[in-house]
Image: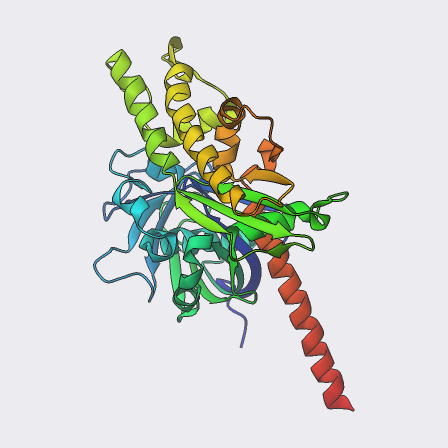
Length: 389
């Protein structure tokens, strides 16, 4: 029987980091990454498209059928940049922020969408040639905050339960393509903070493995604090986690700026986050400069930095042998100048490179996944060799 050119089977190795502001993923290679805003718009309305152009990643319009998405939650979603254009979109703030990442249905939706996009991107050539259905064996790496490690088994069960189906609807390039996902987790569930350290310690010339040190992973909602002893041994006793709700503060900066000018010049929190990360504070409207968010942002973020520093120093007092303290994560790329301003004692605080800070957990998770797959291959080869004796 001739092979059906409209369908294919594939495999993919992928790590996904569900950050509270952005979902990040790396597939097949640690340098092959993408990200999209962690924003979801459930909608059963057909999207109006005049010309189906633009980036697939910026126009994620999907239908998801999954045994891990509760009945009544819906099946049709716009996600990421596309969703962020709608005022009804659900960013992870308010009551959703109070819910653990491991328990949010949104986490499952964005994870499945990220995997499906990676599979489609990997086979873009075949899709252009007419492939409409792809069945993917997925080797997934994913992590949770320190405070949610107890939920790891439940998350793993949701991800590995049955087949998840993601169908792209109006998404350019991938329109009407269906991806079937069979997921396994060769490395189990990672701890986000630990994953970030794995990546930093893997850099040429890194001396972290010889030190005692602390690390704060600053996200949009969570502040995870961990301490390591020489040899990169995690100190379970002193490691802890807090809620800081940077996302809500970003929303307040947007509201305060718009209120100060009496018009909604900033329409999305995603736009504010990008401005804060890139230090691009000037706001233009129809080609004219309408204002600057720096003063409003400074007030809010200075107060948050004070709270973060207080929590870090309190935690550090329980592990005073730590020689230095490192900040990583997307929130660190925003709060770094404010933390430096607040901390006046000259303590050895270190800040990750802004271009890599928000990717550390993703990269570390991918490295751990690669290591687990490599070890698995070696074990399999040894078993085969033993069977031949």
